[in-house]
Image (cartoon, rainbow, N blue to C red; front, top):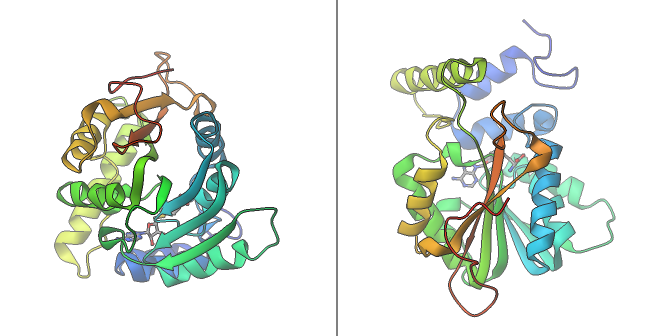
Amino acid sequence: MLSPVFTPQGPTFRELAVQALSSVERGYDLLAPKFDHTPFRTPDEVLDSTANVLSQLGPFDYGLDLCCGTGAGLDVLRQVCRERVTGVDSSAGMLAVARASAAVPRTAPRADLVRADARALPFRSAFDLVVSFGAFGHFLPHERPELFAQVHAALRPGGRFAFPVAAPARPGSPAYWTLLAFDTGMRVRNALWRPRFVMYYRRFGLARVREELVRAGFAVEAVETYALPEVGRRPDGTPRCRLVVATRGGSRGGSRGGFSQPH
Ligand SMILES: C[S@@+](CC[C@H](N)C(=O)[O-])C[C@H]1O[C@@H](n2cnc3c(N)ncnc32)[C@H](O)[C@@H]1O
C-alpha cells in the first residue's frame, strides 16, 4: 500500500510501518519531512486556546517548548514571550524542519533550537515559561517525575510549566476503543521488537499528573488547570481538554491556590 495515510502530502502506510519499527528518535527523524501532514502534530485549536490562556497569565520573557518537534508550540511562545523562545527535541530531523520554518522572517522574538534529551535538560533557572504538546506519552510513568523535575530546574522562581491534558475517553466510546487498541498494539510491539518505541496514550490523566508534578518539586497549591473551550466539550458539558499550569515557587507571580479549575 503506497498511498498516503492521512493527507495527500502525508506518510504512506509503508513509511509509517518503518518508522514505527524504529526507535523514537530514528522514527521521528524519518517522519520529520511529513510530520506536519499527520494528526500527530498538535491541532491548531489546542495551540490557539493555549495561547489565549497564557496571554492572560503573561507576558513572559523567555519561553521553552519541550519536545518541540517541528515547532507547533514555538508559535504559541512567540505570541506570549517578549525576549526569546527556545525549542528542545531529541530528533535532529524534527529540529531541521523546525529550523527551516523558524528561518522564515517573523516579527519577534527569535527562536533557538537545541538538540537534547528532555530527561537531561541543559538549562538551569533559564525560563519564565515552559510548554509541551503531545509528547508525554513517550515517557513511561516512572520517568515523568524526573522529567518534570528537569522542567522545574529549568524554570526561574515564579516561572510556569503549561501543557494540555485531554479528558479521558468515556468507557465504551469509539475514542476509548481506539486508544485501547493503540496502546495494546504498542505493548505487543514492544514485547516482540527492539528497539522499543514508547508511545502510550492512556496513562496520562490529571490525577496522576498532579501527583507527578508534586513529586518533581511543584507545590500542590501551585498546580492549576484551565479549560480550553475552543477544543470543545463532551456530551456532559465538561471540557475535552484542560491546560495544566504549574508554577515554580519563588518571587515572581505565584499560585492562585489549589489544583483548581478556574474555568
Ligand atoms: C508527537 S511529537 C510532538 C511534537 C510537537 N510538540 C507537536 O505538538 O507537534 C513528539 C516529539 O517528542 C520528541 N521526543 C520524544 N522523546 C523525547 C526525548 N526523550 N527528549 C526530547 N524529545 C523527545 C520527538 O522527537 C517528537 O518531536
